[in-house]
Amino acid sequence: MSRSPTLIAVGDNCLDVYLSKDRMAVGGNALNVAVQWMRAGLKTRYFGLVGPDPEGDVVRTALCRAGLDPDDCEVRPGSTAVTLLPRTRRRPALPARGSGRGAGLCARGRALRGAAGRRLGASGHPQRTELVRALVRDGARFSVDVSTHHDLLDLEGVPLVFASGPEDPSERVEPLLARFRERGAQATVVTCGSRGAFLEAGGTVTPVRARRVEVVDTCGAGDSFIARFIALWAIERRADAEALRGAADAATNTCLHEGGFPQPLLPIPLVAPGQICRGDRGGRGLRWRPTGWHFPPRRPRATAPSGSAIWAQAPRRRPSRARPPATWPSSAAVTPASGRRCA
Image (cartoon, rainbow, N blue to C red):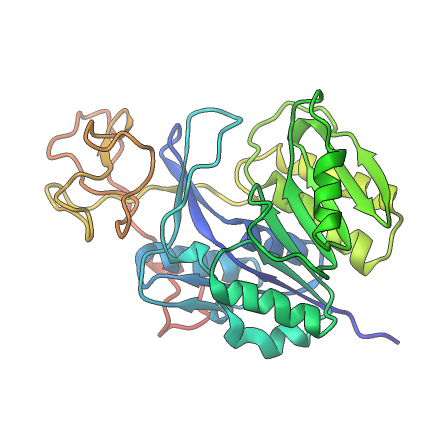
C-alpha cells in the first residue's frame, strides 16, 4: 500500500484588503494553494514568511484554522505583506508590500526534497533561484508559478510551469507556450482568465474553456486552478483534458465567493485616534475615513508605503453613523510564543 504524498507550497502570503467593503481576507498565491490542498484532504505543508506584527498573527491564525502548521510560516524582521484590492470585480494586481512575498527558504531544503510534490511561487530572490536549480538537480517533482514574470527564472528542466497569459481571444497563446518549451520547461500551463487555460506537454497543446458564472470575486481563482490541476494531473495521473476541466471547475467555484478560499472577511483594525502607526513616515500613508480608504494627494498610488502597516491613522472625529473601530480578536491570535493556539 503506497504512502499518501505530502504536498508543499512555498511562497507568498498577504492580507487582501477589500477597499469597497472595509474588510480583509487572508490570501497570497502559495498560501491559497496550500489551503485548497488541505480542503481536498491532501497532506500539505506551507512554507512562507511573515513579519512580527499583528498582520502576521492573523496569517498564522488562518493557517492554524485551515489545518496547516503555523510554525512552518517563519517570523522574520519586516512587515507582513498587504495587497489593496480596488473597487472592481476584475482588478489589476497591485503590488503587496512586506516580507510575505519574499520567500528565500533554502533552509527548508531537506523537507522539500522529502516531499512528493512542491509548488513554488516566482521570486527574483537569489535563494529562490538556487532552490529551483537544486530541485532540478535532485530530479524532484515540483512546479513553479511565474505569473506574468515569464523571464524571471531559469526554467531548464523544470517539470511544470504555470504562467498567466492573454485574456483577449485575438492574441495567440501558442507562441508563449513555445517560448517556455524552448527555455526548457517540460510542461506548461497558461491560464487566461475568462478565456480558459492551455496545457502544453510533449509537444501537444490542450485547451479548456472557462465556465461562465456570475462572478462574485476573482481573487484566488488562479490559485485554486493550480492546486486542483496538480492534484489531478501530477498526483492522480489524470488525462490532460480531464485534469484541465477539473482545475477550471475549481477556479470557477472560487469566483463564487470572496477571498481565495472560504473564510469570514475580517474588519480592518484601526489605531487609536490621533496615533500614527509604525513606519508611517510622518502620517503620509493610508488614512481611514467613514466612507472608505483615503489616499492623500502626496501619495496617489494605491499601495501601502514600504515598512508601514495597512492603516496609518484613525480620524480624530467620526460621524455617529460610522462603525466603531475594529480590534484584533485576542482569542484568535497566534504568536511565536503561543505556538499553534488558534480559536
